[in-house]
Image 1 (cartoon, rainbow, N blue to C red):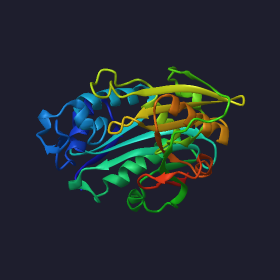
Image 2 (image 1 turned 135 degrees about the vertical axis):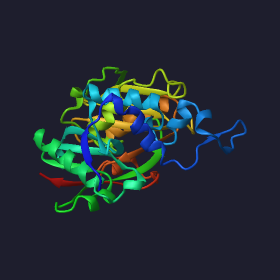
Image 3 (image 1 turned 90 degrees about the vertical axis):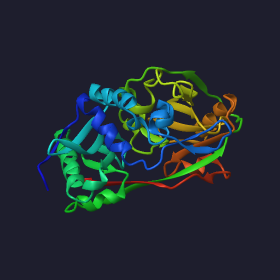
Length: 312
């Protein structure tokens, strides 16, 4: 391989990171006024329509907002260069959660250009992340991509957790609770907390990328209905975010952070509040042990989420 360098990303890398991710999209599409899918040139898509193809990395503008947020302390953006050209990108988040996760570094993004796949770039990004984890005195490195394991041999990968992606009906319930808007976005509030609902990556990553209001300047994202609430049930506080589906206005994705294990009354309060907000269906990635608290009417919603790790 040519000269390979892995380093912390800077804001100067914004255009290269966006180009890396957009190069993987074979067809740019949107819904027309009749509700049909049509192919359109990238230049004709709005920032929101580009976002729908894969998130903030789909345009220079939203990538710059996201990268700035990470560089201000939310996470660790990383790039891999070959002869000065960015060919790989990773993002890692330091979190502290109850077992089995503990003090860990979670890699939420690990992407390499197709022309460089399998040539050592993935391994270099993982080695850089592992070195960062050791500096942070983490117990383990985690990721939700089992494919990445083949690029970092010589360590004992193991399955750490498995969660189901499901949906279930929102219903009014008989439980006493308080739910008030909560806009304070400091992640220090959830240090050491678990995430029984909505944990696709890590509790810290989900918080720092979802709770702050980062996208108020982006039409389409600005109009997405989001409620951020602090609940109190039986003396136990927890935080919940409801994010309206961009396709089904009466559906909402649910994200829940809690210092205590989930209980039936907590789940009843979440469903009741969703119903009061006008939603009729909820969906979330649900941790083991929490699904049984949601009742018998749950339905599968996409693939299960598995988190792998190796200990340091």
